[in-house]
View 1 (tube, rainbow, N blue to C red):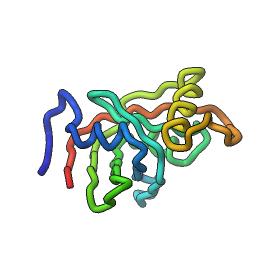
View 2: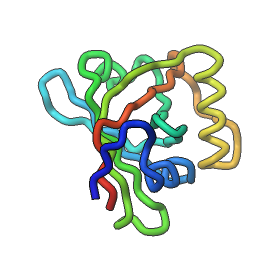
View 3: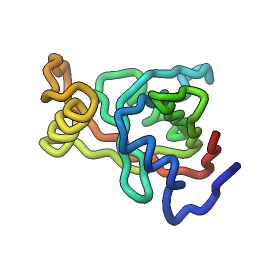
Length: 134
């Protein structure tokens, strides 16, 4: 089924994003090729949130072209997933982005984020234009 109610994300999208399920972020490279990354994800009622660093190619891709697809797989059944086609609608830097990566790390690893930060963390706020529920 396809969900196009833009007031809030589909219940299954919210459930999968709230749990320790992995997301695949697909962005467009400058030449139009697709680049994808496995990432941590969370959400509120209306948006998905991913966290990266400002020097990374995926962030540059989104600055040039905000279109994105995020696929979230159910860790217990990878044949159960959601595909969110949308766009980057906001970014958050600074202490809030640093705290967010710690929150995600606690959800996925059970401990604060310990990898070296090379530039600056940034939260990517993704709005759904279309959701495909599998």
